[in-house]
Length: 334
Image (tube, rainbow, N blue to C red; front, side):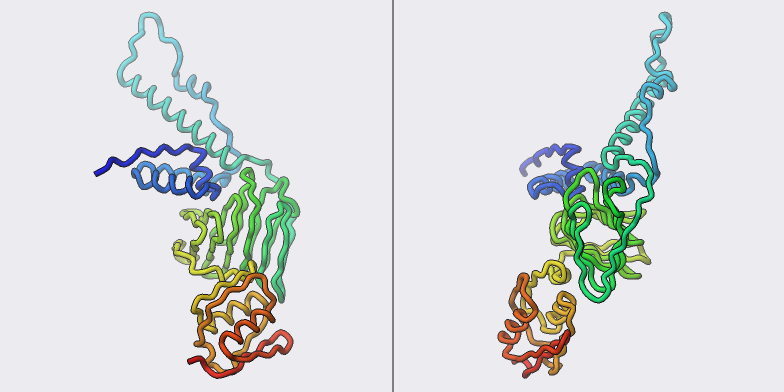
């Protein structure tokens, strides 16, 4: 049996990993390091908890190391005739020094991951999507796409208030990277923190679902947290406070924002639902048996007329448009 190679991981790389800024090679290295020993996994979880709850206790002042040493009588020169330190005092001194070191390290890590900023109540703006999909560019050049009926509240400026928004409904975010100011989405139940990535968030009274297009996000509540990477999705159940993470089956759920559709032997009933959401139209199957037809095709940034032409030609059926409603008719598929 070959001996497992000892992998060294720096603090900087761990922070990049948690922020979703690590390269694929770096992320693989961290994953291998975590699997190497239980202590490594525990250390990563400690970093994760610090990051998750950083800043929730208000202003933090780092301890004065010299003052702590003097308070514990550490470092004072003993009398000439009493050079030998009792064993118990030696153990106490060593433990006190270790405790002060841990306090200082924790304070430095906390300040690094969440720099303190003066408390300031920002003026808030609200984006509300009423009957159509709403797209907007945020002050940091990030972009957001809201589904009809959704609402996003944000500061008028991200300069002093950080990059924190409040979401009600569903939205797709493409976040501009800024390691100094993580982008945080509050949903009222669980929150999402990122440095720079693209992801979809869907909220309702029972759950919050995060689907990551690329990069990674930290999905957390007051007690627990998970890292959701590109190609994965995680759902948080409000009643049980439980996170469940699975592989993302395609990207059509947020095609309303990307306008990229990939259908692989997909039932027409499912295709219709995706297109209705993306183009804000109503599609009626005049022959209900058409729902079981399957379609394999893809579209990128095509108008709905083009999409319907391809679909109906592929399935040998017909369509007509009457305002915002599209009617599909024809014989059921073989």
